[in-house]
Length: 265
Length: 267
Image (cartoon, rainbow over all chains, first blue to last red; front, side, top):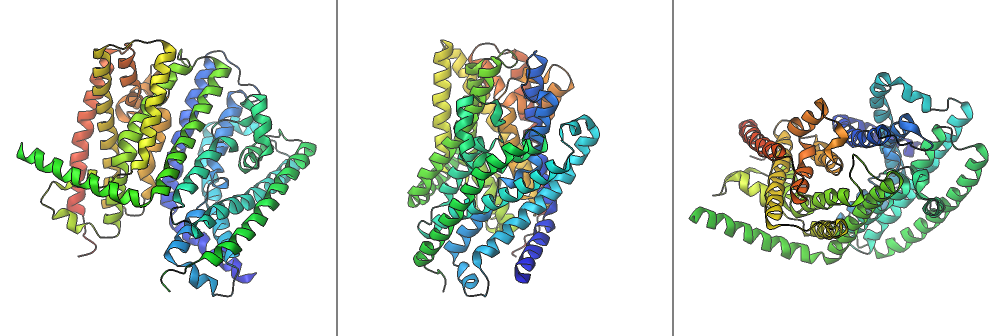
């Protein structure tokens, strides 16, 4: 376990070394957030009601999609692809650690470093507009549910993007596939529009997939909109999906290793 | 004239080389098409559901906003991701890793070469999607276009593309000072989302001035589309030209300052 802690620690420090770059990235994302704020503010100023949110609620929602953005993005598939097509995977395979464990620790350190940095960077927004904090349900149970939700989202994030990255064993051109997955899930995770603002039939279909649990559910939990009963029921579905992906992941990894050509050896 | 001919010859040769390279990775190209289409589908669904709920935004209905989205896709796919982005990012990387010296010795304007030397043909799917959306929305709105509208649209869209290029070029020049700030190259992503909505969402105050002149997001797609459907306030056409001239001057100054600062890491 100690070696995985070291992987985590080292990668965490590496990510923080590039903090200026991460901060710029966040500021650019914040610009996207400002765009959403203008659109929704105008919608409300025209006399419309933003059902279930109100203006403050919807702004808080979009702010959270930026602050917790690392829950639904990942470098794992790109990282694994580079390791496979350039042959760097070979040296990892002969060392005494689990390669999937290594990539998991790396992904976890990236997610946590971004979560920490981005959360700190949103503080000035809460100072300027303290009323946004009213959207948080300050309750110990809510925070426990939120952390469980985030933890499971991190596991799913890894299993999804690692599975996509495994495709590089069969095709050196898997970059495009990674792009398809990344772009296609944007709507289903709720980062463009909250899922409960979609038509009901659409909602029903999306909520059966694992994607809303990557960002939509954690934010809704934080807003106090997911009661314990719904949480248990919904996250039961999510855990089912995580197990499916982990099994698929393990199966494809074994198959993929048989295909591996170890370029450069 | 001979100079133009020489530059065009260089450009056509580069296009040919890029086509050969891209054709080696046909599957990637296909996934590229699927990926960009998936991205657009998500954006269209967002606008569709938003306007299904709220009818109009700043008086613009779904198809009118569709014209903005379509135009947005034209500059994103037909210029930005086709040439501007791959070329300037490639130069950014070359400077960062100290491999750019040879480019400065080519018997051709360095700025011209670094701005066009790479291409990504998978972005053409964005262009085609944009054209489809544009035509579909025009048909749905029942707008009959005049030749003058189309000429104005193409002219103002070209100005917008030039502004986008200048902004990306200025941002790319940051590499001469800071090599570890690659994220700054993604600034157009922020522009992209903003420019898909009518500028009325900003009201008529300071914000509109800022997003027209300082960060000219709101004129990029809005001005050509308004010219196309014949509702353009002519002063915005002038603003576009003025902004393009100002950004050209700024980009030239920063480029020259950057070159003076260049440390030639590989030599």
